[in-house]
Image (cartoon, rainbow over all chains, first blue to last red; front, side, top):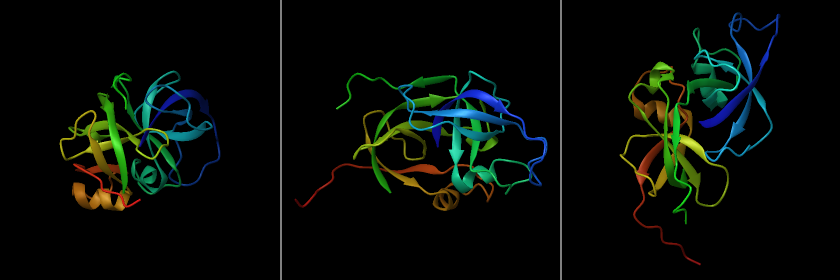
Length: 93
Length: 86
């Protein structure tokens, strides 16, 4: 799993069976310091996240397990909205 | 599995139901690479070196929460020492 910031939404009218009505968001993957780790990606939302939210996501096959019905073709799913990241940067070796 | 250092904790009250009551930690691979999140089931703490399983099937088997578990990274051990032959 990894952190990300929601930076946009995607509208797609024609979607694969199982993805109808699912919200797709553009997410910028981040590390715990807020640094962007790779290019933005599209993720399906399961927690009613919105633009600007810091979220956590699950990737690969496990993303397909986050939805009802499960096993739909997605490779990233937003599974939580972050309230707080408590990771002291000082004291790092 | 990967050796990682625990950097801190992540809390979020709105989440998928499988994350209810789970402890979510930020871990950084010791050999470099970006930090990621892992569910902790071995009471690891900040600063600990841990063993992280990054594979969903293994996580599902260990968590015993059924098949529909969107959790991929699981901390499975707190490392005391690593010996390396140079």
